[in-house]
Length: 70
Image (tube, rainbow, N blue to C red; front, side, top):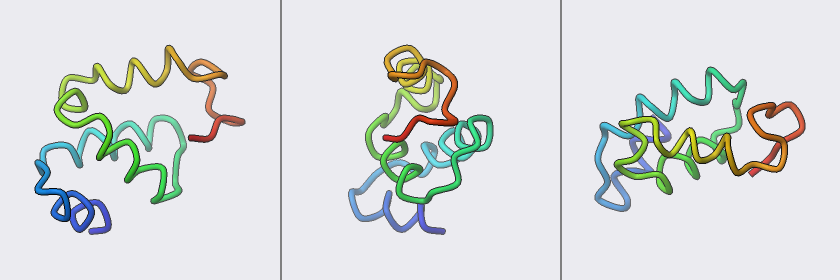
């Protein structure tokens, strides 16, 4: 519901929500602020997984997000 509200604020596409939630679950991210940032920044690339791959490749800690914050 938080992501729906945030996506609606920017006239976004609700299709971005499910990939964002899947990514957050896979990476153990449970802070809504991180989910909002991912959902609103990646835009349509979220649907293909391209944005999630970019996050993994360019984060300081790679795909290990235990110590990684946005």
